[in-house]
Image (cartoon, rainbow, N blue to C red; front, top):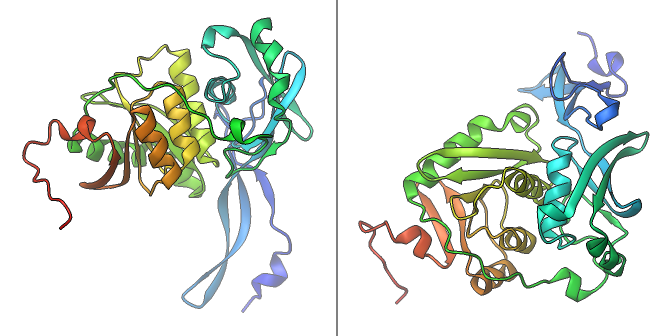
Length: 306
């Protein structure tokens, strides 16, 4: 029997793009492959086989405003224009998409540089944020220099839309079916915009849950989508920065497949946002402002702790 260790030394990494696919190397516009192929040794039922596996990519993405570097985030190198717009809005760098005058990604040997041009009025207050640090894949607050920057208080959200359990059930099915990168790699989160009666309208993926949400908010801004028409479903926990980003964007309903944190619940209560966690199948837990989910649930029986 051939020893697989003798035939494979180091993993072989190569771009996983095909001709015409989004992962194709196009240095002019800053895009890169979303995943790569790796030669691996798979152990199954006591048998070792040499196979090819798909691995999600993450690269440093530098956001540069009016020529001044601001922050570097680790992200999946797709939909970076959406990411830059969403990040700028949810981090309070700009107040509206109209204050972003240009967005252009550029490939660099170490990663991708996204150059944004914003209005002089907004740029004048940008240096005071002092967020010139690296944000890791799982971090939503990396680079914040003060507690005031880290824990912000967005305005209250609008009326939003009423969501049924049937809407949540269909949204979960559609999201799973359309997670193209995750179906290959099993390593990325998704954030989806769901409109009751229409289903999944937009979906963005990234190795970072907050990056996926920023990308989604970016495409909502680009398409001038009314925040009162739908809700967000994410494949992650509902941590503070996820609620904060939704509230900053005026989104009234956030549904997550995992749990929230206490800080996230308190911010949802403060901003009027409906926060639902453990959204799985026909079940969920509503942590704040349940009227957007329960108004149409006349058949449900409400029980209270004894």
